[in-house]
Image (cartoon, rainbow, N blue to C red):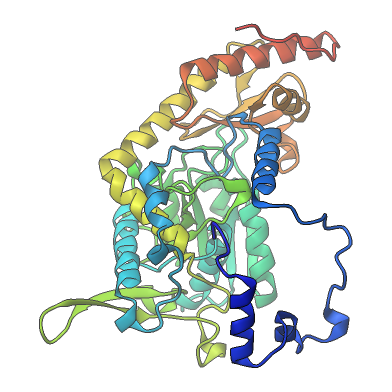
Length: 466
């Protein structure tokens, strides 16, 4: 809230109505041993003007570095109208539409969102969102176990080239439910998951195969071959995709001969700011055959007896509902505000606008790669085609290099050694549509000076004079 409107007199009047003496009495049911006690480290109260000044000061300390960092969260342009509309009161405060008759606006928005996501992914049905991309993958794995009736193993093949955080979150969520996640190595030359890496599992009871597009390295996988392999081995194909990439790449519903069975991913590229790590939202689509195995809400449209269009929750699976033990999920939720912003964002850009953004991102990343590889010792690590991101090999420590770049106001990328030690001094770089030619050149010049300086054993990096 921009301000708190209630005076002390009004607060006391409300307390009198409900029959208590003080606000603290509202919390008397909390046992004393669970209360935090006195908060001694909180500074003394300051007024509104002082708070605003303090927040501006803290924001200046953060600075505004140039961002060439992707790795699952991306700095895109968000039209001003997106959050101007999304933060209107009727959207901002809307919650779960349990009573359809009083929630038609919210239900219509979710219906439009589902329609847009299914169109983007070329799938048949979508839910009304999940927590984030990583937990959406975990839900997709659990859904695959329920949906693939012919498989009894609960074994799922997950490429090592999938986002490492996604793999960790999925393992944390599903391992106590008896699922076995088997990591598949990637090709060290091309950076993709080859069909040859799947050969040891031919003829075995495999429940599902996870197929990222692009994968964590930005590499485009041979999704048609992987999808067909899954189906020929009686496994489901689970697509994990960047929704922006779907504007120019083949959508999961058209992969291979039959299309992917489940599609999920992170919706952050669709109008959600980086915002210090969230909140974001996960999306999920599937084939109509698996509709009842999909977690979350599904909004449907119909007509009343007067012929007027109405919206309702056609299917829902929530932890607070009855028959919890038979629910498709006990942790899924609808990120309503994020989905609202994403729906507005997609409506404003349309299919043409999304394709233009995706193309601009791809072109900028190629330009960045081309410029950085003119530096002695900097090379592209993998040979296959990429989207949005590129892995570069450096002649010095990637982590040290990124620290030096940060000191110059540049978020230079993501060091891969902590997650992929076999890749050595490599980093993942990204250039969205926001990066200009001048910024790319500045990055190139700064990186060149850092590498030269560290190769000479100097800790001092002379400033670049523009």
